[in-house]
Length: 227
Figure 1 (cartoon, helix red, strand yellow):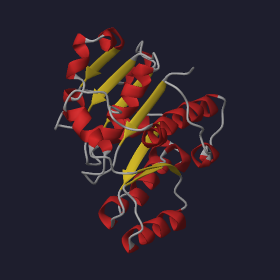
Figure 2 (cartoon, rainbow, N blue to C red):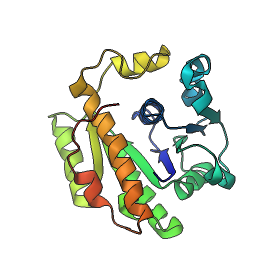
Figure 3 (spheres, rainbow, N blue to C red):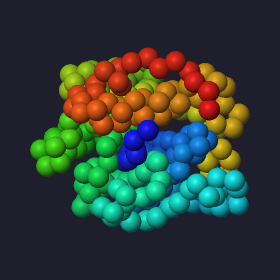
Figure 4 (spheres, one colour):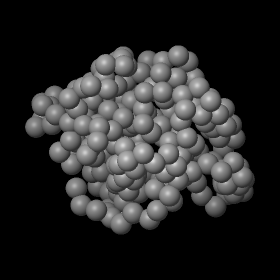
């Protein structure tokens, strides 16, 4: 498997950015990968969420740091997960440039969707990223009229959607309590998060083989797998 570098970013806060970064890192650890978590958000919630790991069997397979350097590309870890601040500053731009995939979580509201066009255009123009390397993750979309409008904006913009997550109160509780993210969730509730992990892995394999357009990876239906 190729080394995987994933950034999670939206200029709008409160969209589940850090939660998704934590879940991806934890799934990677459970699947016996070494993980480097890079916490660029001044809130440092990403770092705090992993404090309990130091005293577990995962401690030898996990490392955190608060800066991103080009030399991190040669780190010994299998997965690099970057939690970006909710601002498109030089730190975030470096993360987008560095990462193979940048996940953009969006809620069904204008404020989380409005930065998407600018983010993708900047990444395409300045960092030679294809739009398919910046897939959206829809969080908490429902049957409301605003969600319908949001879906129309996404469809009209041609933005790839990697996954769609429901809102689960137990997930932020688990993370803030130092538990594994999936504690108490059914297999059906876990499936979209595990699917995102598998899709990212597949996308990296496609990119390493020289494919530029990986839209098809995000559109595929992933079967539920075992940890």
